[in-house]
Length: 365
Image 1: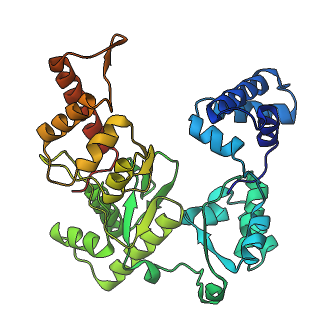
Image 2 (image 1 turned 60 degrees about the vertical axis):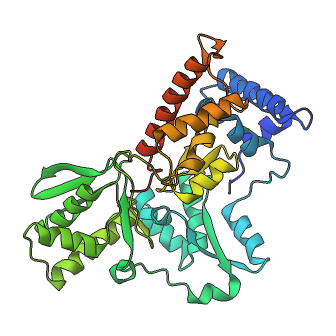
């Protein structure tokens, strides 16, 4: 859900309703380029237009088409969205990213004021955070209105006991200062602890990446290394995992994630990705719920990654797709037609796709 922006309206007005989507996207890019180059940089609106246009310069055509050119494109504020949802028997549950619901993660100094302004109303808090931070997108989860009274918004360590926790691949030990061990990821989030047991638990979580880790698995890993974990220590570990989740370092899942660390002889891709590839979908998601792009070769190869096909079988399928005209290979601007050269290209592209899927958490261990 997007909030209204003047850039959206200006681009839509310039493009108009006529022509193919590709032609309309081209006109939208013209407008974005014009705004970036010609709006007065010394004004507030000029600065906003230039920054947003610059950010969109490298965006996919599909994003430009959806964001600016949809036939049904009526951006609204979060309060307006929830009012509309309420009129249809729906209520607010939360955001897909738990950490985005915490004003302390956006502006710690302003968080008490934001909470005071919102009262005990999460919808109002979300709207105030939008106003204070300029946030324009939400990933909102809705429920039926009659279930609203059952929502418990207080997050406690006990509520997370049965979850499996996953960190970014670049999460790890950062530094040590004044007796604190700092752990961080490339997104800027961090967590520190002076507790030796909690530190060992986080180190065990890092060692288990890219897999997820439950509290039981972390305790087992610690005990395997000779640590003694009593109930008090387990409680402190659970509290640390909760705090790391609230700041966005970890995400929780009801299902364990077992991600392949290396290519197997007969790789297995996650079922949803295989189904999307078979359907010709260009954009799907990996095991970490992150976006993944499926080019034409990936759409040939990925549906076959069910554990029953090795590299040779995948290459043969890609050659068959080339013979059927589904894919073509080019070298130096020329279409490859010789069977031996097609086979070489097919092998190269299969290896490329497999490497891309493996390094982007698409293959199951």
